[in-house]
Image (cartoon, rainbow, N blue to C red; front, side):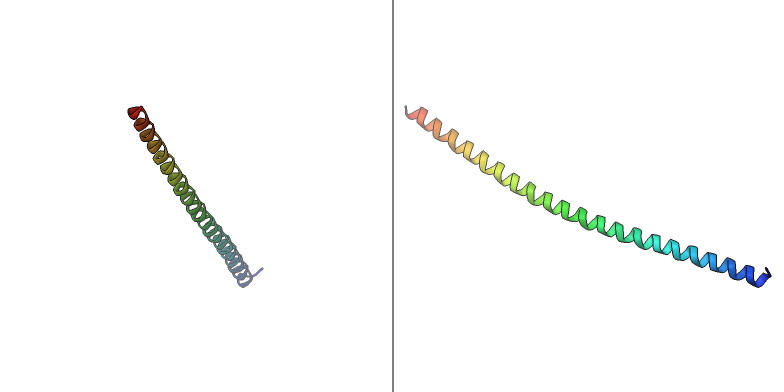
Length: 78
């Protein structure tokens, strides 16, 4: 092999490795984006579920409070 062939061989390998690194980086960025999107949807779903749960809990507390007040009125009257 002469110097020109060695140079071309080295350049080809470097370009090939850079292309390979670029593909890995692109796949990593794509995977990262997908993970962030799915995490966002999980958090939104959890937030909706939490708000529903909180509303149900508030409604239950209000019902217990009203029931307790009603019972107190019944006891105070009786």
